[in-house]
Length: 154
Image (cartoon, rainbow, N blue to C red; front, side, top):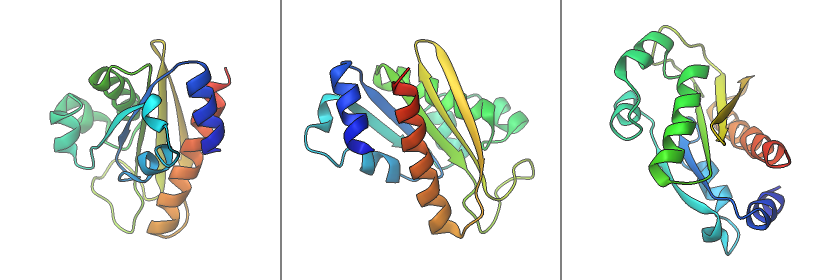
């Protein structure tokens, strides 16, 4: 899967940047695993806390409070804002609750939102994760890579 993403991004001369929350850098690690990935990978941020989403990605505090950091709306903003931050063609984000506890009253355990932002359009996908913390993070990386690959083909 990584080789396919690598080849498509390079052949289309596209760049990508990533804002990670639930995956904590694991997605970026996968994306840069092949030599030469600097040709398409512009950078990433791990915005694990609400404060980092506000300070680094410039997401309004009120939007996080209204929707929850684990929401379709915030995932979309994370993707579009990381694209702008790194001046890449594509922005991608992950946000969710890997467990075992929760940080807010609006989201639920095992929720995952991933967003792909390209050409001023954002596609967001929701998943319900049901494993332990490590399994949920690994699943989030796996479905993120699949979603990136699916959207590159279009």
